Length: 547
Ligand code: GLN
Image (cartoon, rainbow, N blue to C red; front, side, top):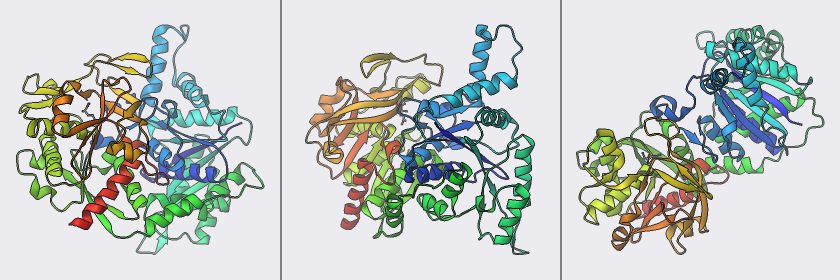
């Protein structure tokens, strides 16, 4: 039987609900329980796939091919549980399902209303697939009181009402602002936020209070009394140096104990936190740093490359160095010499991206890394740009480019070394691309296997020749050019199992130059850094010793 923990937020947004949920998940695992983390998102987009990375941060892709919110990335990085399509849902998806059903006549002529039709749809979603876990943790996006979030709040209230007493608890995150003038932490916004929650029928069992200053006992008592929670259930959340300190920090504040108490689980199994102590140690005890440039397009919002930044941090932890990430806007040197922008970095990473803007700069970054023997990791678009660079500057295909760019402008400027794939194989069945003009759901998405060439650099890095990684792209490197490119030293060292789709390229005579068509960053964890990132950072360290 699963127990349910619903996590809501109030007072202000961006309090770190996702992080608190993920850390709590990790702590319950440390106590020997199995967990599943899920997210209800109030926005009206059907999924985040079409949302701008500038606005919404990165799209996190699951093994089963869902384009989800980056919070699912946090969950996975903290618990190691692979996120699934059914782990998140948006209002947009819920309404779209309800409206489809209405059109099909499934409601037999009834008047369709938010309650019960929309709320039932949410409850049905919440019921799927929790049987195999001890705890299902479910975060509700936004803050209490948001109009669009109301159906979700009503649905979780009903959900807990439908369950036997003691199977569901509510955890609410708030902020205790500090007034410097009077030197006080103010509890009123928290009281109001809890009132708001109570007015829609939800009484929180646990309050997690973000605060920049220690919460005095007196204030804790006051919050407990006015918000009707036990004093031990008012848990402080202070600012941390690294998000990966969160499990230990929350444990020290008694969060996991408060949760188990709220469920009446006694005696609680003792936590095994060795793994998190090791993570903590690696964050705090390192030997020097390396500077890595991420040459991208969405550099104003770091969340746009969240998983990459995290995976680099994990790579640093694996090597006991600090990775200093610098964001370099590729567009700056689309038409100029890239060298002044790229000198001084110990490694260069070109991440995924869409559209032509900034691609000439990325091609130059690949060229710079190749010529100067700087470690290069190209991810998805970053691999495609490395191939185009090789084709243009080494194999003599002067007009090499990607069909993606011609597609945008409707012209035929480039020789399509990277082409638009229409049909491919997943496992043992064929997949055909859906219509072109619908931007959502037209990509090669989710986990695919790849076979690596024995003896190649990547095979050595992975320590195996069979891998499975997550994809999110429409275009592919054309094998038509394989022979020509391999002749000049760019090896196709990883291919789809049917040998048709290039998954990995690497320069033979380069200290570390690898391009991958997939997104390895999505599977990296602080306690299990992805081998490509661990080795990329190792190569950066080696390079830093040469400079
Ligand atoms: N725009 C490229 C494609 O669709 C690369 C996508 C990506 O980097 N995720 O193939």
